[in-house]
Image (cartoon, rainbow, N blue to C red; front, side):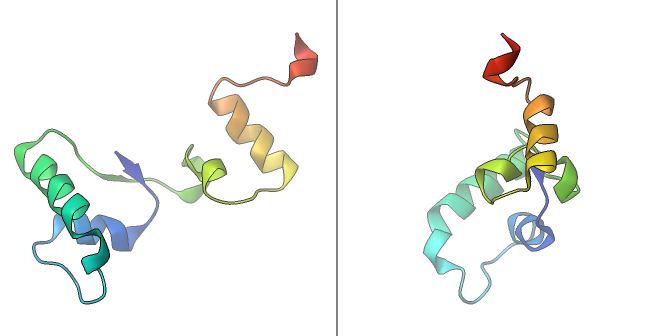
Length: 79
């Protein structure tokens, strides 16, 4: 699993839940269990290389176009 948020990576890999993070307790424990069993590994990825970013925030057209191409998407006008 790629993640560009260092705090989220630390929270997923460290035992215990930090104060103020109890709102996602159930999902947190599932991810921790998957990490411990080796089903998933969380890898730090730079935000510019995170393909999920266009789904979480607004981008300027050049950056959005680059991400779309990385996902294999093409403009409708290219058909």
